[in-house]
Structure formats: C-alpha cells, structure tokens
Length: 396
Image 1 (cartoon, rainbow, N blue to C red):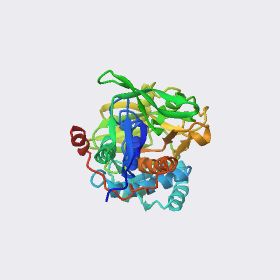
Image 2 (cartoon, rainbow, N blue to C red):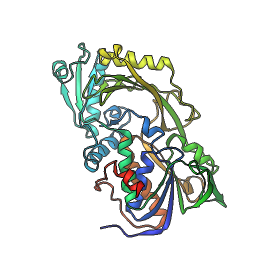
Image 3 (cartoon, rainbow, N blue to C red):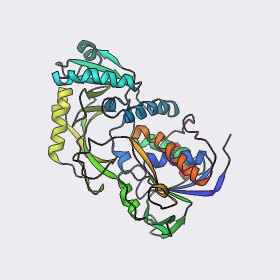
Image 4 (cartoon, helix red, strand yellow):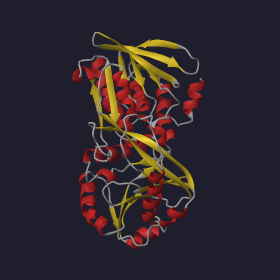
C-alpha cells in the first residue's frame, strides 16, 4: 500500500550520489514531493569512484566503533533490499608480521563488541581459501565483507525513487541558494543540457553533496565542518583474490585489495585538501599501492596497471587534520535552523557507501519533523528495483 501523499510539501535535494539517491527514495516512500539535482551525471562524484567494498565494519572495529556498528547494520539491510547486486565473498584480515599479530586480539574483541561475526583462521586455512596470499602470513580473521558495483547500487535507489514520483535531474547545477530573512526557500539552477537558468522553490533544501557540502553551505553563508580527504586507488589486471583482503593493522595506505570482476583494486592513500575538485593522482601514491598491496598478495607487484584515480571522502572534522585518517567515518545531519539560525536548510554528510541508506533515514526523519509529515521510514524492508529500471523510468 502506498503511503499518504504530501505533495504540497516539496524537498529539493542537491547532490546525485548514493546519499542523495537514498534520501530521494526514503522521502518519496513517505509521500513527499522530491526534486533531486546533480551538476553532472549521477554518481559522478565520490560515489562512482570508491573501490566497491560492502563493509562489514571490521576496518573500524578497534578505533571507530560507532562507524563499525553502522556498517554491519547496513551491510545486513542492503543484502536484504538489494538482492543479486553484491558478491557476498567475505573478507580476510591478514597478519603479515609481529606488529600485525599484536592487533589480532584488539581486532577480534572490537568486532565481537560491534556484533561483527568473525572466524579465526590458521595460515594454512587462509592459504587454502586464497592461494595468492603472502605465504609468510601469520594469522587471518574472516569477516562478512562483500563487493559491489558502486554505480549500480545507487541506481537502484534512483530507480525506485523515480517510480514513486521523485524528479531526478542530472546535469543541473545549483549556482546559488534563495536566502531571505534567515530562510532558504529554494535554489538557482543552471541546466547544462539546455543551457537554461531558473529558480526552483522548496520547503526544505537538503545539501547532500558529500565533500562539496562546505561549498554549497557557503551559498547560505554557513560553515559545515567537512574535510575533503582524497585517496588514490589502483586497479590492476587480474583477479588476484576472490575475497576482500585487508591488512590486520591500524588503517593505513594500500592495506586492502578488493576483487572487481577481472580486476583487483588496491587502496587507498589519504590526505586533505581545500577543494574537492582538486583531485591529483600522485605517482608516488600509485607506487605505494603497488608496494603495500604486494605485501598482502605478492603477484600484485608484477600486475599490469589498468587505471589509477582518486576520490574525495567527506570526513566530518575541524580543519587542521593532517591526513584524514584520524577522523571518524560516521555521518551526521545538520539542521541549520538549530545550529545556525537558518531555516529551510539541512546538510547530510560523512559516512560511506555502505551506510547510504542509514544516512538517508536519519536525514529524512529530520526533514519530516520539520515539515510535520508523520510517516515512518520504510526503506529497511522495501526491496529496490533493479538498476536497469532507472533507465526505463527515465525514458517513461
């Protein structure tokens, strides 16, 4: 049964990545009229550039348990509502040296505390599962990681949102916000396909632009504490593992290998920038991916490069962070009426691709309270349309 309609309430979502798509889906299910705009193609920002890991939360179980709990909860939900899109191939955290071994017990304890299933493996058991692993490995732990196609996951949310009435407008850039007397009432738009410029009115404008959140908030004279943190990823030819392989230590450069079809993706480095559009691919970072990836899987050292790129993480934190690794991977919604005295404007940022649905639920709850829309979240159990439905919905 479709929810009650609240078409007199209009929400403009700025940002066509995974979070924006999930939010459009959530609000459309609650009967709210939604318009989503994205300056480029959908998922052309951070969403379309990550390595495609469905997180178990293991990477954060020691130092960032809030993020770890978010990841394992959303991991389970996404498997249920997006059948057939994930490789449920699990992951291995591998100890290579004595320092890694010291991390073993805190890691297992952290996973247990966060309710992340773990299975300890001997080196021989791990090598039977993944024969290309470093033969000098000392220990391994199995966790429920998985892999995904980043764009296809997001398109399932866009397709279902569109089916339920959301208007999705790629190649439409917000050039300014309509702000008067402490109220944001819409945005100025530039349609890059037609060249037309215009305005759209909205009861709430949601800033879901990830590492660009600070730039969009500045259009309303606001400051959002975001540190864009790029990282280099390297794809090499050959599927050198079938499970996700992680280094069993504190998060560092080149400490994960993610199988993607006939490729292996090694990531990532980390630094911070002022401008999320200023994404470099330093060659020494690429070399570091080769070197560190080969410590996990020696064959990577000789593998042919397929591509190298960078993506900016939208990390929440004050300026001055050195590399971005010290910042949490959790997410947050800012109701700017409460934080800055500006009504009609909300920002959702932080998080990871795995937590996009949970981020959207939190933000939609805030938006609906502001609009006095009394509708529950339905996204935990609503099975999404296939990604191909996005194109048929757009054509219709």
